[in-house]
Amino acid sequence: MSRAKKSRNEPALPVRLGIHWLTNAIVLAVVVAVLKNVSVDNVGALLLAALVFGLLNTFLKPILRLITAPLAIITLGLAWFGVSMVMLLLTKAIVHGFHINGFGALVEATLIVWVVNIVLDVVPGPWRIVKKR
Image 1 (tube, one colour):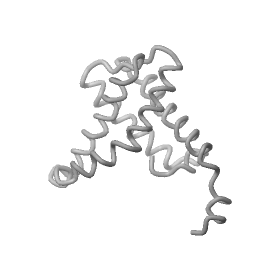
Image 2 (cartoon, rainbow, N blue to C red):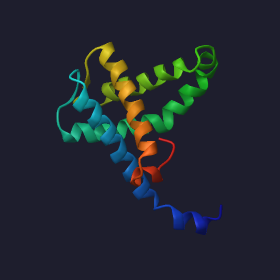
Image 3 (cartoon, helix red, strand yellow):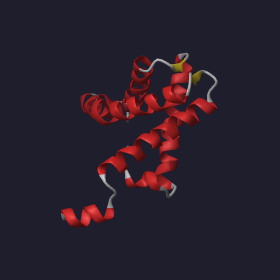
Image 4 (cartoon, one colour):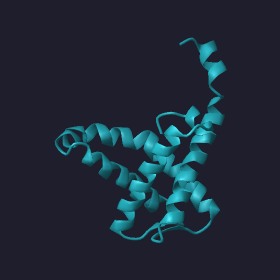
C-alpha cells in the first residue's frame, strides 16, 4: 500500500495511539465496574493502568506469545490465556492505585478484557481504526 493512500485512510499516529489508549481505558473501566475485587483509586490510576496495559500488550505480550507457542499448541491456546493474565498482573504491579484482589478476580478480569475486546472488534467506532489490540 502506498504511503499516500495509507495516510488518507488512517489518522495520524498520535490520534491512533490516543484511540488505543482510550480503548484500553474503556476495557479496564468495564472490568472495574463489573468486578468488586478489581478497583482503581481514581481516574488517573485508571488512565495510567490503560497506558501501561497497552504498552505491555504492544511490546511484551508478542514476545511471551512467541516463547509460549509450543505450550499453546499443546494446551490448544490455553497458555495464551495465561499470558493475558500476566499482562494484567504486571499492570497491577506497576500501577499503584490499580488493584486486583485474588486469583479468581484475575481470571474473571482476563475473561472480561477478552469479551470486551471481541465486542469492540465487532461494533463500529473509532477504536476499529487501531486493529491488533
